[in-house]
Length: 368
Ligand code: NAD
Image (tube, protein in one colour):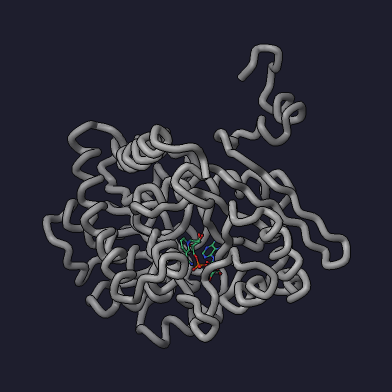
């Protein structure tokens, strides 16, 4: 922090965007406002060295604008490393729309958002994230080609969530192989926190393998639906992280591994779909390592969705999507071994490989 500022708060007030704690050399941040539709959105382009910045749009009722900006900065940065470690020629970007997806999302608002995306001429390509559905991407597609995750009827690869779940399953199995010497998840007690689009399909894979699955969600209807469908147990307590379990799968929102939860965590593996699971990636990454908890880095194992949408840009088929997603198993094993050998956190080990790929490309060419 520059010396003339004696507190972070002062610095942030003086430099509200580039001084944000989550700002990390982002290339471009676009604030989008439209009075008629009520659209308030922020598009974050973190890095375009490997290609156009691709990442989903999240619609969420943020506590305030700081929280929204912080989220888009963190999420777009995560996308850069996700694509880099997965070997895709994409940069990192993300968008957030401030509002309640259930009551404030309209086709007009989505079209207006699409126009803002279009104004960036392809530097940012959007997709689905929390609060969005495939039909919303179809609406965006009416005004811009810079959108992925559109429906199969409209020529897209469809909902990416089942592929994301498959990748998380692969990453979890790899972590089990590393920790227990076997990747069989039968009888393992696995807590899935958040049973939305990704969480539910993950539950399906896990129950098919005979795992002992416990689910939690803030949506009671969903809990009952998933329990009835897969015969899993609904978590009835109020301190999930403190429960005895083999594997914790965070599949809701980020930062659930934080100062409070990390001391209670009983799991021996963490493998889930949520983005930015570590509240502080350096501190909490190392604390997990010291506790002997195997953490499968989120941006590595939840890359199935981006592999799926990338197929729309590159034109590869379903079998290639599945092959690339299955490869998450091998990469996870490599990263976990690398972390063990070098004594760094698993998150750092993955980040280093992603950063090296970007640095090598930067040597070769100018930004996209
Ligand atoms: P979703 O909105 O369909 O599901 C999220 C679920 O979490 C909902 O059922 C919601 O009720 C629940 N939830 C919210 N807060 C909770 C809490 N405090 N405790 C328990 N449950 C809670 O989202 P999704 O598409 O399934 O994505 C889940 C996570 O995975 C998100 O963090 C997302 O960014 C990440 N992710 C998704 C994809 C994808 O392809 N959809 C790809 C990569 C990463």
